[in-house]
Structure formats: C-alpha cells, structure tokens
Image (cartoon, rainbow over all chains, first blue to last red; front, side, top):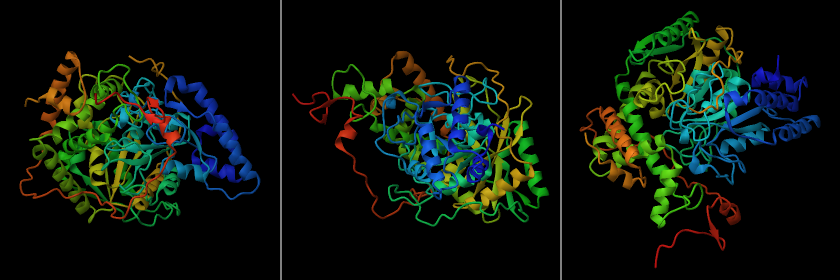
Length: 496
Length: 87
C-alpha cells in the first residue's frame, strides 16, 4: 500500500521499526499532491522545504535520538494558523501577502515533536462558511467526488487528509468548521473543550467560540495529535491551567455500561432520512456493544443557530475591525484621506460573506438593538449550556448527526444562504457550551458520500469521548482511510 | 423589520455600490428576521460570562521592528506611513 494511504499511527510504527523513512513518506505525499492537487485544490501554500524537514528528522533518528511518536509524520495547517515565514491568508484578499513573524502555539508543538509541515490549507474567508466556496483564492473539491464541496470552513484540511495530500491536519472550529467538513469527506474531526488548546497564533474570528481542532483519518491518530497539542499556555488568556495526560493510551474497546443520550431535537424534519437512518444504526451498534441508550430532550436547541449567528457575528465585527490597511494586510491603491483608506481597504479586501457577518455583528451591537439581540442571544447561550451540562448528569455522551445532509454540490445554496446557517443546528450547541465534540463516519449515501455522527461530552471529557469513538470504529472494522478518488466533477479550480 | 443598512455600513467602515447595497439590505432583513426568535430573558438580570477567563497576567511576545515592518503596506524612515491627517 502506498505510504500516503496509511494512518499516522501505522507510519509511526513503520518509522520506529525502520521499515520506511520520513523522506519516503514525504516523497509519497509530494508525488500524490503533484498528481491530484489540480483536481482537489486543498492548498493555498505548499511548503517548499518538505523534503528538507524530512531529511533532518531522518538524520536525527539515524543517530539514535529518542523522537516523539509523530516525528517525521506530515501534517497540514489551516491557513489561519500561523507558521512563521509562510503566508497566513485566512482565505482572504485582505491578508493575501501577510507573513506571520511567529509560530502559533500549536505550530511550535508540531515543530518540537518533529512533525513535517506540508503547507497551508484552503478555507472559507476568515472561517466563515460551510463549503470552502467563500475562499478568495480557489475552490476546494471533495475528494470522494469532485462535483461536491468538501464542507467548511476547514475544507482544505479534510480534502487534503482524505485525498492523501497530507496525513493529518489542524483546523479551527467556531461553529462546526472542523466537524462538518470531516463528516462531508469521511474524516474524523475533533473539536476539544474550549481552553484545552491554546489559540495563540490562530487568527481570531469569534474569540469566545474559536477552538483549534484536529482532522485525521481515524480515532487513534486523533488521540495522538490531540495529546500533542493540548496544554496550558500563558500566551492565551482562555487557556485552561490543568494537567493533560496523554489520550487513549489503553486502546480499550469495551464500553459496557456507557450511558448515551439521544436528544430528540437533533432528529427533526431538517435532518435527511438517510442521515437519521445511519446515525440510528450506529446507535444500535453502540447498544449491541453494551451501552445504555436513553432518549433525552434539549428544548433550548431551537435557539442555538440564532444565538450562534448573533454572538459570532458580533465578535467577528469587533475582531475584524483591526484590518484597516495601516499596519499589515491589504491597502487600497487610491483614497482621499485616512478614513477613506480604511473604508476602501476594507471594502475591497473583504469578501461578501465576511462583510455580511460584520454588518450583522455591527447591527446587533448598535444602539437600541443590543438588549433585543445580543443580550438575549447571550442568555440563550447560557440556557443551552446549562441544559447540556444538566443532561450530562445522566449521560456520559450525547450522540447526534453532525450535519443534516451529506455533502452538497458546488453552488447548491447560492440563492439560499440562510439555509446554510440553519443547517449548523447540530454543531453550534457544543461550540456555544464550550464542550468537546467529535465527528466520525457512520454511513454512506447511495451516491457514495460519507455521513458523519457527532459525539459530545462534558467539559474535558476528551478521554471518554475518544474511547467511545475508538470502540465504535473498531467494532465497525475500522474506517476506510482513502477510498479511490472518483474525480467525477472535473477540475476543482474551474471557478464558476 | 427595516434595517438602516447605510448607517450600519458606516459604523462597520464598509461601502457598497448600489446593487450590493440592495442585496445587503435584503440579506440583513432576512437574517435579522431569522435570528429574532430568542427566549424571553426579562428575568435574566445580567449577562453571565459563559467562559472562564484566567485572572493572572497574560504573557506578551516582543518582535523585531524590522520584522514587523516587513508586513506594513507602506514604510517611511522606519515608520508605517499613512495619509496626512492634520494640515
């Protein structure tokens, strides 16, 4: 089997036993990327030192140095996670030429572990979107069928991991941006508890919701990568100061007695029949493995999308005020005055969806509307959080669909973008509550597109959540890492 | 509900041409109608922060002036240049 098709855990074992070198793994990834990137369009920037990084690690291994299990394994970064000296565009024209002078906390961790950074991956502009169609630079195709979107906003991450253009990736998840594209591409996407992973060096979108998450091919890889990037960081005010032991060290597949809550509100009419059927079959499998399944109700879920869009847009309007064409980023060529320079730089530099969210955020914070929208949304957020935490008194995990549908075709929601907002219904509650959630594959449509199931847990219950996901994966016989890419839809970069 | 989109655009430092403004006007009204359904929180006296922020001092990182200026759109004598603001 080609090296690019293997999981990080498999490659790590091979490296340890000297059955392959990091240079061989990276060559396999680079050749694969050269072959298919024109059709997938996952990268905004491909690192030009991949082979040099690999050789350095191979040399260290050759002299007998004790290395991290992920040393020599390729990984990609969403283009909003800083890698010193490499463009960090956030999928936006306004940051087209911005080169960060520092590494994000997670990037430092990857480098210290000796991982090979392959490049910066495409995304919806400033992580606002569910299809990666909002990128200023290119569109990214779903590797399962290139006529379909990979999901978003971390669509470049999931497309690269599942097409063999890298082995793992780090994305960001504000309202589902790691979990939803993972569901669309058949990956395992994990959003940790708010505060578990430092956001230092992650470009801010909505600071009370943003979390860095992992995109991997299976649960074991997710545990390896999460164990590496978790940790207290003084550079992030929201970093949680606690111990982070390594995850999933026992590889236990025994879940007898696990209490699983199934919330009625996540199986409504907006969820497609095929998705419901797949998630329910998966729940039956959990039951057959000895789990106790219980129906529950989370009535405040109906407010989640509204609260999410108000809060995230309000925070975005504040965070994105920094882009004014003065210190870094795009500056308009023609203007009459300083304030006209701000106006023109922002109006040319930002795309429509980003402007729309900034407009909404500005509106809900404006005089006369704060109490009616922002304050109510914030209180709704508290209700949602309280309800979820109360549910966890009787359940260990909660299982829901990750998204109402499987991947959709390019342009499918061009005339009804509000539908894209309301379809975030399954992922935004965990974001509002700051709890961990994972999306794992649980089925496939008749078109061959993957379906994702979401497992949520209480704050800092990552070990339990990953154990349950791992047990499920093993009981299904394992996830299919890289299915043959059908490439039915033509070139990814033919923008329409 | 009617939204004063021109006023909001001014607050957000954004400008739109006539067609974009019409589209934004409709989008804003649709979105605001959609997000308006929220629980009555009259009895919730104040906003409770849903997050736990640390109370200790956050560390800061210092950078080389030269390095920072590499990203500036326009530099003049080692400073970031902007249009004249006073006569």
